[in-house]
Length: 390
Image (cartoon, rainbow, N blue to C red):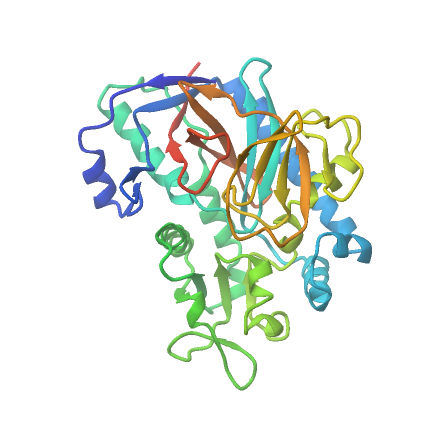
C-alpha cells in the first residue's frame, strides 16, 4: 500500500458535473480528491482484503444464525422485542440481501488488515466507488498517465447488476422502489446509482422519499401518489424504521424489503464482541467487548468506544492510555456501547487512511479509500481512488 501524489485532471469537475456526481464537494470542501491515489499489489488485495472480507462475511452470516435462535443475544443487540419475529423470520425464510461494506485498518508494514466494523445495511460512497473512480482510472489510462495494465479492485457495478437481476423471479413484474430521506444529497446519489443498476438488470423501478411513505387501508406501503409499493430498497437504518409510523406494518404486509430485516443484526456494532467471543485470536479481528463487560487483558487501556448504533464516526471516542484523545459528536449517545482495541489507521502524508471493502451478495466486490486529518473517519472524509499495479 503506497500513496502516490498526482496532478488532478484539468476537467475533473466538468466530468463530475456531466456524470451527475453532485456531492464531489461538500459544503465547499473537497470530498472527491484525486490529488493522489493509493497503489496496491495484486497479492495484497487478493490475500489481505478480498479473502478476509469473504471469510468475515461468512462468519457474520453464521453469527446471524446463532442470534436468531437466542433471545439473550437479540436483547444484547437491543433489537426491540416487538420486532424479534420480523427479524428472525426474515432470516429463516432466506430473504435475499444485496450489499454491504466492511471497514478495515490496513497495516502496510505487516500487510495485515484489521476489521473495524460492518455497515451491512446502509453504506454510502457506492457511486464514487463503483463508477466514478473507475471513470478516473479509465481516463488516466486513455490519456497515457497510467500504464494500460493498471487495474482496480472494482467489480461492484457488474456484481450489483447481477444480484439485482437475480431478484426478477421474486419481484415478477412488480417495480422495485428505491427510497432515501429528503435533503441528503449523498444518499440520493447512492439510491439513484443503485436504481440505475436495477434498470440495467432489467427491473422496473420507482422512487419515494422515506418521509412520503404511507399506509393504505389494507396496511400496504404507498408512495406520495397513493400507489402501492410492492418492493422497496430503503437507504434508511432498520432501527429508525422500527420507530416510524410504518414500522408496525413491516412484515405484516406483502411488501418485499431490501435490505432484509435480518440485517438489523449485522448493522449493529454489537456483532464485534460477539465475533471476538466466537473467533478469539482471529488474525483479522480486534479484541472487542460490550462496554458493560469486564474486558479481557487483551484490550489494555487504549481502545475505541463505539455506540452499537452509529454511522459515519458519530459518537465515537478514542482512548489512549486511559485518556480520551478524540471524540466525534453525533445523535447516537443513547444506545449501548462496545469497546474495541485500538488499531490506528495508517498515516500517509498526514492523512489517516481507512479501507472500505465492499460485499455484493456473498462476494467481495470492490474497495474504497477514505482519508481524514482526524483519527476518526466521518461522512466528510475525503474519497481517494486506488489502483492495482505490480
